[in-house]
Image (tube, rainbow, N blue to C red; front, top):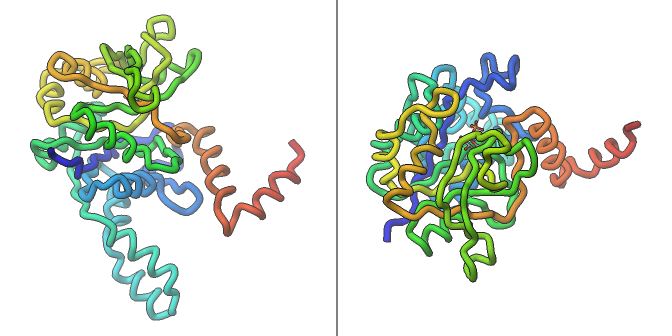
Length: 292
Ligand code: G1P
């Protein structure tokens, strides 16, 4: 059985929702407390057993490459000043993993970004993580999904219930629960649609940005016409994949933060800071003192 070793991070988006902060800085580098958003995802992939990271970048994204690279001058300076804790943090980032980069020259959509990783992934199952979706979980979300992949040998899509009109911001699954397995969290997918109108949504099961995919997805992506927003949608390609293979939805355990949204980003910042031993207590007291 092939293991899921590679994790693909589409990171070529323009980040217009966070302008002006993202004019000269990739949105993936915005910090949640003191760690760039993309690092949360990379650490999750590692904790799930992936050891090769593929980041699909575009223009203006060199800060991401620098972040995961060795910063010789910084490490030397921290060493000389005896700042061993900070040195360990900085060194850990570049030491973590093998990262490969591939450029997406045009922003043609999520499906197109994944297709760019084809050569680096090859003929094996792989994970896709959308860094915007930061998932706080006792067992890393991707690890939960790889467990499902290993039991089923099929593609697995993370899902969560989204009520009301907000569903139109997501890909939505048409799926029915698989009884007696994975504590009612597993769904067999029969169809899926990208960003439907609320009245057209086949269910309230929204796609969240974690996927484990079989390599056959690349052939499907090549056959997929442009879809919602004039983009090559991963959701549409997985719908084509369904003609050949089973696909499962998995309702993961954990809390998902949509850091691609300003309010979601702020809430995640506060929640993560409150959990930090070095910051939480002060922040809690300060928050309680605010006249709201
Ligand atoms: C992407 C996917 C969508 C999914 C969402 C989850 O959309 O296309 O199917 O529901 O991520 O965050 P985006 O938010 O990039 O428009």
